[in-house]
Image (cartoon, rainbow, N blue to C red; front, side):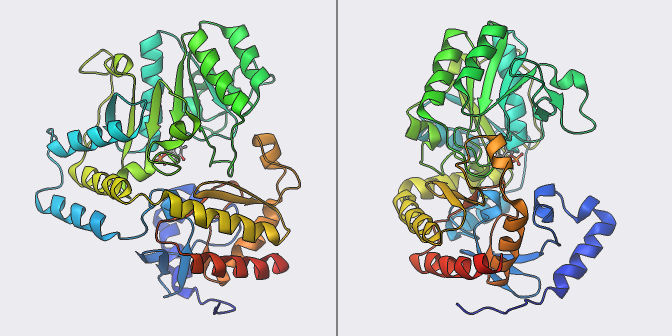
Length: 428
Ligand SMILES: *Cc1c(COP(=O)(O)O)cnc(C)c1O
C-alpha cells in the first residue's frame, strides 16, 4: 500500500499544544492521550466510513471506532439522518418522548435477559447505577469485580486487589476514599477457585458480581466455560445478582451480546457504546422484579437531566435497527478470521479475538487474566503502533485495549492491514 514514510503532523502538534493550555493533558479522556505508546495524539477533523481524516489531511483506516460504538462506521447515513430529524424537533425536553420507549422495546427484543431497561448517558453511569440497584435490591453491600475489567470511573470500582483473594480492595486513584472501595472484592479473571473461596468467606453478603463477559479492557481476554458456569451457579446459590457489563460486547459480538453467545442469563446487563450509535448513551436493564426497585417505580434513587435525550435515542435506535435489518456479524466474523490468520502467519505476538474484537498481544503465553496481560511487551506494542500509524492504520493506542472491526471494513482493507503489519513488525 502507498504511504508517506513520515507523515506531516504539524497541525495536530499545534492543536495539541493549544488544547494542553485549557484541558488537562489536552484530552477529555486519558485513553486518547497516546500515553500507552508515547508521543502525542493526532487530532481528527472528520470520519468517513472506515476512515479517519486528521487535521493535517492524513487518512487512516480506523480500528478504534471511537473505542467501540461505531460498528457501522463513521457518519452512517441512516444514523446521521435520524439525528438530524430529531434535532429539527428540539434537542431536549426533560419530559418523556416516544423515542425512549422505542429504543427500550428494541433493546428488550434483542437482548434475551432484559425485561426492563433504564437509559442514562454513559457506560460509567450505567455501571454505577446497576451496582447501586444490586445493593438496593439485595440489601447487601459487597460487590465482586475482576482485576483488569473496566466498568467506567465509578469510585467503588477503581480498585485493585487486596493482599489475598478474600480481602477487600484498595483504591487505584487519588480522590477515591478507602471507604468507597472497602466493599469491593477484586478477584482474578478466570479463577474459579478464587470465586468459590470468596463466596465461602463472604456468603450472603455479596450483592453482585460484575464482569466483562468477554474482556476488552485488558486487551481481548476470553472467559473459560468453567468460569462462566461457576459465576452463574455461585451467584444463584447465594442470592447474588450476576451483572454482565456488555458496554463493549453488547450488539457487537451478536445482536444479543456475549450473553447470547454464552447462553447465560445475567440478572442485570450494563450497556453503552453501540447502544448510543456514537452519541452519549448508557443503559442498564434486566429482570423486571429487580428493575422495578428503581425510582419512581421503587425506592432506589437514580436520575438524569439528559437521560433518554432525543438525539441520543435517535442515534441509538437507528443503529440498532440497522444492525437488526442488515446484521453484519457474518461479515465481521469472516474479516476477523482473515485478520487473525494473516497476523498469526507473521509469527510475532499472539492474536486473541472474538468476532469483531481483537488484540495483538506481544506476549509469549496466552493471556487469560490481568497478571498474564501485564507480562506483554508494551514498549514493543508502542513501536508497532507508530509504524502502523505511519502506514495509515489507526489502532487503539495501548497494548491493553481491544481493536474493533466495523461493518464498512472490507477484505481489501484486511489485506492492506496485514501487509502494513508485516512491515511494522520488522521495524518494531
Ligand atoms: C467503555 C466501557 C465502560 C465505560 O463507558 P463510558 O461510556 O466510557 O463511561 C464501562 N464498561 C466497559 C466494559 C467499557 O468498555
